[in-house]
Image 1 (cartoon, helix red, strand yellow):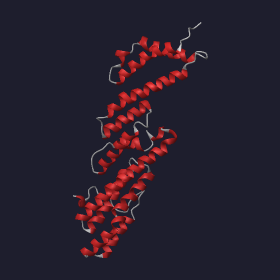
Image 2 (cartoon, one colour; image 1 turned 45 degrees about the horizontal axis):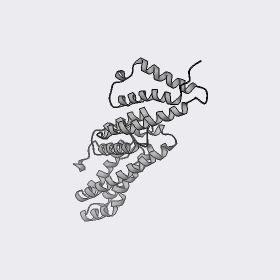
Image 3 (spheres, rainbow, N blue to C red; image 1 turned 60 degrees about the horizontal axis):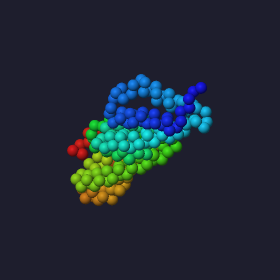
Image 4 (cartoon, rainbow, N blue to C red; image 1 turned 60 degrees about the vertical axis):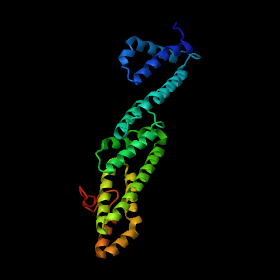
Length: 270
């Protein structure tokens, strides 16, 4: 008859394995810590404790101890390893941590910072890993696996992303109005809308793309309309030309192809 492994005895054996596993997390090679005999010892201990007849079935207790040990390791070892990481490096590490441990709430703030930072860099013309953004943002990685809260988390990200975009384009509108003629300004807006759409469709859901472009148009056109009219009058340009440019911007498709030909480089931003 197989000997019963009591809870205290089994936990003493498994604590040895937990200590070794934590050492692996901080960089020690697994082969230096675990021999084949170690693996068999820990496996047999867990198997026995989970397959014993009640009241000696300790599967629930082992699960809770494993959960506690994993959470302690993530807080004390894994998360501190992110402190010196930023942007793409941070997002890539977050992706790996999520793949390994399926921890979300503790990582979400880091995720937001890294994702928004990369989006802003992409908007400013810097080279970014767009495949990484796409993998993270279009429900293929994080959001697809966080259960019933995935919509809530995505909406939280979307709200912050749209708020950042509104601030960015409000500031840009102010800068452009100071130094561009009304014609240059309208043509620049058309170019900016095309570029924002072409970027955002690569890594945002379609609904988010539409909301983003609506914000861009509002900040660059709707909220500057009166100043643009004053510019047009002050510069005494042909009203028909002005209206034609406005119509082109207003007629741009937010979700699909634009009637305005995309430019690889906007001369008005030089």
